[in-house]
Length: 276
Image (cartoon, rainbow, N blue to C red; front, side, top):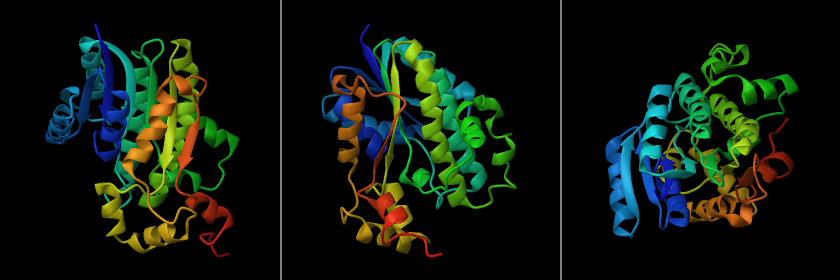
């Protein structure tokens, strides 16, 4: 059987990564809306990739497990790219925590059970996780290691504690990188690796929603004030993912790569620093 690369959330970033790591492999594209996966499949198939599609709800363990089983039926699962999620403009705090935090934990658990020796996973987190103030060691451990099915019941994550969509998003993305660090230990016992990438503003449909939404002015200020002076592209994220998933990244696991053009640096130490 051949190798299989699973892309959960085949939007602009998911497709860019698939183009870099999916040649000669079966690429399984999965999305909550199957028509989105079909559209991405049409594009990749036209570019010469072998593609199949599936529907998945990352907030459902049953659905994610079914996807993992489908991937195994196609071949040896050597790659997993988790690029699905919702933004602060798109969803409520409850939905953000359920999809971006709990959903990612489920994906890591279920695909950590099927990833092959030598395989690699990527989770797309966000620069937003780096703008959250430092958490306590106890909070870090809870986000990293609480069993996924108990995660949303943790006292620090109850909706009464997190009422703002941006806060929910930041805690979810910080949780993603911490969860990947912990899961890297378990994946390592299978001879596999997993890392996060925390992109800044990458020009995708989701980013355009943010730029035209209530936080648009802040996003434009980030772009203008960062060292790069521009937003990023999905292909740039694809290049970093290809490094992490390929042989040149074989010594990298449990890590988070922040690629935001210098926005976080400017937030903590430059023009974007919060005024006290």
